Amino acid sequence: MIAMIRKFLDLAGERKKQLYLAWLFQALTSICEGAIYFMLFLAIKDILGGSFTKEKLMQYSLMFLVYTVLHFVFYYFTIAKQRPVSYAMMRDERLSIAAKIKQFPLYYFTKDKISQLTSLFTTDLSFVEMNIMEIIAGFVSSMIMTVVFALMLLSVDWRMALLLFAGIIPGYILYQQFQKSMVQLGEQKKNTQVAMIDSTLEYVQGMETIKAYRLEQSGKLVEKQVNGYCTASDRYEATLTNWSMGYKICLNLGLFLSLGVGIAMVRSGSLAPATYLFFAIMGIIFYRPLEALMGSFAMMNLANASLDNIAEINNLPTENEKQGTTQFADTQADVRFENVSFSYDGKRDAVSHVSFSAKPGTITALVGPSGSGKSTLLNLIPGFVTPKNGRILLNGKDAATLKHSDLVRHVSVVFQEVYLFQDTMMNNIRMGNQSATDEQVVEAAKKAHCHEFIEKLPQGYQTVISEGGASLSGGERQRVAIARAILKDSPIILLDEALSSLDAENAVAIQKGIEEMIKGKTVFLVSHTLSYIQNSDQILVLSDGILQGCGKHEELLQTVPLYQTMWEKEKSIKNWKLA
Ligand code: ADP
Image 1 (cartoon, rainbow, N blue to C red):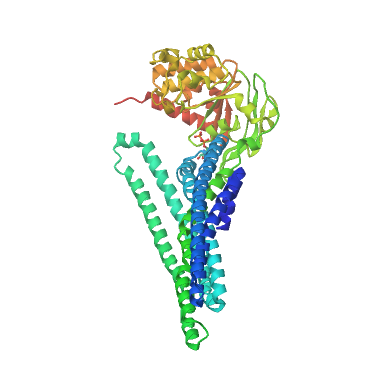
Image 2 (image 1 turned 30 degrees about the horizontal axis):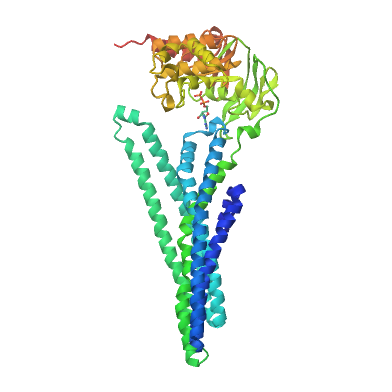
């Protein structure tokens, strides 16, 4: 619990004072509650001692009223402070994580990481927001009540009190064991939950394919993961119930012990029967706060795991932390790779010892089988991933020493998948250059051959595009991406499969747009179709991250067997006709 409170305080940052204030009110609420019991105890003591007068009754009644009113007042402030501070903290956290995500290296966003982030936003942050203040408040309250009760009991009869407290020792030992096994089960429960979110996301995202191919089996994985989560939750709760029972019994051993020994003491005359009765009643009440602590353990465990997940995201290094400081503002860029290697997992190189150079005004094509490292090589250029070994030089300057924002500004990227934001078409294109005027946007759109279809939209350039650009065709989205890149006018251009899977009309329009965009630039182009790139100034042939050859089409046909095979295959597919 203490570790969890510490983690929560770390997360609180400047809101620590607000947290302390909320907990202070909780402590005052508990002290008032304890004081009410204490008065009850004093009254019983007076009754037992025969000194309970009318004046005392008035005194106790007045104090009871005062403590009850104070209890309500402090309780009100506890509630009023608790929730808003956790809402405010989680709002800060959501915004800071959202800002941080933007700075994560691009390769971070794999499918499992996206599920992890989704789970963080939908589960962890909400769980902490809704529960953690109550959990900590419960802990503060339990501790204070236990101390108040313990002092009361010790002042009545220390022998009986110590016998009663004896249950705490086995209870504590059991609690330690219980904690270990619950942390393990909690971890399992969390993993099954992430797997469930993962499979559900995949199910929803793949619905088009599922429907098209009538994949009856597709829901089975979701069903399996949902059942897996339910089983893990059941196991967690059942184990929690068993341990809770054991803990309760351990605590109450103290009660049985004190009552058993107490009877012998009453018989021998060393304990007043009324005191015995007092302990019999208080013995039951004494363990209530400690039992409640156990009840909140499951919540505490989950909150702890959620805080760990939040901390994990917060501790990930961002690109900005790795960036250099040298400014870069050249209008043309000569790109040189010197013995560059990169690995995602630190074990296997996705790109291995690659060297080549590319001049402004030339096109460098990257070809090779799927998984050979083409996209990774492209991602190395704008610093989306950084080399493990070797250097990338831009006009002779090591890219690692350049300011990351300068580097990114010098590179335009057109991916096969183009994301359009829920905004006007004008603003979607303007993303290439925020300071561009409307006229410059339109001019770029004309060059990218998207002006005609934009004009036909209901409100032309002011038409708001639905999120992801779903209302536009793949070819139209791609032309918008080209317009963005034309507007950005950066010296380096990366085209990742930009010509794949397009119909002939779109392919022609896009090719024209691309020709306009790449004039005088250093262009890198990934393509599966060799006939698209056969006229490139140079072609890099990759296999398993290793550069097999670098040269012009004719040259590679003679010298690189892999290229030759790929070319033969493409030719045979082209010649293939339906029988
Ligand atoms: P290509 O573009 O030629 O298909 P990639 O550059 O995408 O190849 O992939 C090269 C290798 O790196 C492959 O083995 C692939 O599995 C791996 N890889 C690609 N992206 C990631 C990633 N985000 N995390 C881990 N491994 C990756």
